[in-house]
Image 1 (cartoon, protein in one colour):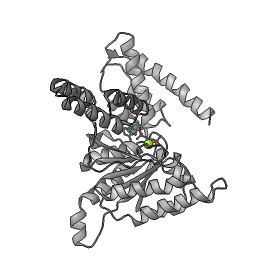
Image 2 (cartoon, helix red, strand yellow; image 1 turned 90 degrees about the vertical axis):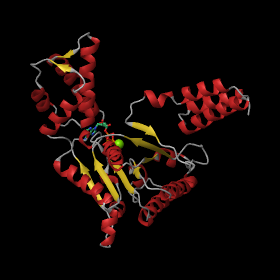
Image 3 (tube, protein in one colour; image 1 turned 180 degrees about the horizontal axis):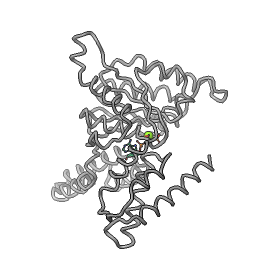
Length: 334
Ligand SMILES: Nc1ncnc2c1ncn2[C@@H]1O[C@H](COP(=O)(O)OP(=O)(O)OP(=O)(O)O)[C@@H](O)[C@H]1O
Ligand SMILES: [Mg+2]
């Protein structure tokens, strides 16, 4: 391929947000320059190609593997992503009960060998259920950091969006891939695939796909930790629930948890002494951790764009009011 053709493909990969293809083409361009003995150009291109990884938040890195990432035959989109996180368990703020249940999963997973001497196996198929923004996806990232294993994130949209005939084969490809390593695997927002099998609108084909998914979960014997998340537990088929060793509920934070979350999210900025975080905690019942995070970011932004380096109570109240309006709109539009 000529440089022109490669650059054209590179642009297409960029616009499709196909990171893997983008890096592959980048490497090809570099190799082309090397073959032309343009060694300095090749070196500069290489530095430029990977510069993003250096400047980026170090809590998330792409993981490289020799195994090809499975793709949808029709669209060519990758069916999964592999990422590595560097998050601390303490960044996760949950009720004691949920936190304990999650810890038991990772401790069980770490004790794989000891358990085996007792002929026991750790629970390795876990369903996370709970409202949006309560930390299901985030917990998977924290668990992957804690266990030091890459996170395989399954892109359900890509699996389903193809012709239905391809869907079952896509699922098979995903399971084949994950069987070849030890990972934390997240099937995120499984409701898409797990919609009640009795639903009138479902075609026979999608029912087959759901059955297929269940069978693959059932038959999965690998050493990975399989997580799945849903925020619509009521639409999930009971047959799906049964396939998991454990279901963990993510609830909205109570007042103490909201206090911890707000303090965590306001950490980056100096605060005026009379700032009243307890008041904001009382006023934010029903907010998810993700809502609180956005609210705190808005408050910090409000201070900064108004040229102050110290957060005032006004900033906090202003963002609280704004965010409350948004939440009200969200419930009205439901
Ligand atoms: N329990 C939590 N503790 C600390 N931070 C949290 C928590 N829950 C959510 N967050 C913050 O909010 C962001 C969004 O949360 P996350 O994506 O995990 O929600 P979710 O439960 O997966 O929601 P959805 O059901 O919409 O996918 C996280 O990246 C994290 O920064
Ligand atoms: Mg999520």
